[in-house]
Image 1: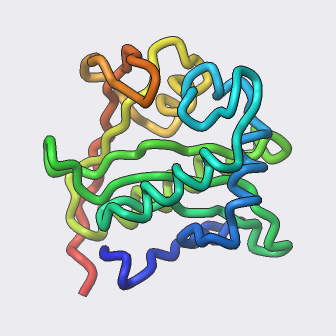
Image 2 (image 1 turned 90 degrees about the vertical axis):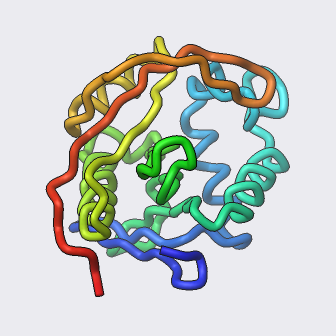
Length: 185
């Protein structure tokens, strides 16, 4: 899926579409509603304990430069309210598989199954494109992230060192086999 054909997915409760420049305040609010994430990803913070709208813009701009990377906004189907976001690549140059880089739900919408719904929609989309599986790396010690990944069916298969700007972290490598579907025509 190229960025020339914007990826749009739907779940029972959400519509997912590419993040645009006009969505950055909403993206910022999703990040800001999850302050504990700052301890894991300092690259989106202005200073310890706070998110930086400029860093959020840079995060989006970097994602937008990569034709295989998708930063999608999840909005409530009925109200249009932003409820979360997801960041993934269609194909990693390392192994040719899709990788989920981030699934984040606004704090006020957590624990309602929205994150699981978003991941299931992504899995169906990726399976329809003929992908045999999807992978993700969860920062070691991120118990909510590890719990979420396991709850949607991901299993650990190893570990590695991963670098983000300003830090190197140990990550748990996880994968989820996908049921093979014929590619979309």
